[in-house]
Length: 296
Ligand SMILES: C[S@@+](CC[C@H](N)C(=O)[O-])C[C@H]1O[C@@H](n2cnc3c(N)ncnc32)[C@H](O)[C@@H]1O
Image: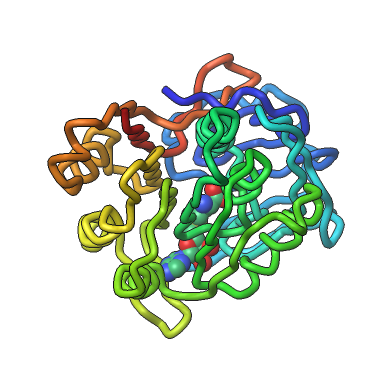
């Protein structure tokens, strides 16, 4: 299990009846969560005093309670220093951050920092489906040179701002608004290579020109193509999935069978669920599945 338990300005207070009760900085939010299939008592009084509530309605949803500011910031004390992120109440219950990914940010940043301290030139990291840049900011803080790819211009601008807020405006990072599969194929043709790849795809998405992304149908093809971008001395490959049903072992199988033999024989794998601690129950809340591969 990969537990993101270092947060101070985020807290998963409780999870019950299909919803999470969370603290984001000073603000209390209630958001839907399909993993929360259990029902219990809502003992914590904060359930009755949220600043924001997102409720699903048919295929969509909206913030039915909104006493939040337009935006505010939270900080994460990562292994490579403090990272700062701007939050905004957005569509599809988003706030602009996936706090459960913090354990993966620390893992990636630790490996990058280790390589830099061992005298390696800034490792080249490719972050696919990079969203508002959680992994980008952590990797840049650790000393990586990055390519950040996402279909959404808005999310990419938010990532730029998070880099600035974290003091990384001059860090080597190219921001690309593109379809991940198209970008990866183009990079192979250009002969570019990366020392590390981070991939956190949604279950369903669209590229900037409407290119369809469906995890179950397309993850295998993208991973098989992306491994061709690994350098001769790669550091790691990290894949995360939020889709209910894609277990950590499935992700591991996909990634290990995609690796060419000379890399597979050097691969060391860790798989697990990405979790957040729930304050009320002291239990880990499952939020996704990750496979982490490092190379000897
Ligand atoms: C689940 S989020 C990633 C979470 C992020 N890695 C984090 O930890 O904060 C999914 C992102 O994938 C992007 N996306 C969806 N389909 C895409 C595609 N075909 N090509 C590129 N990006 C895509 C969306 O714009 C969104 O920002």
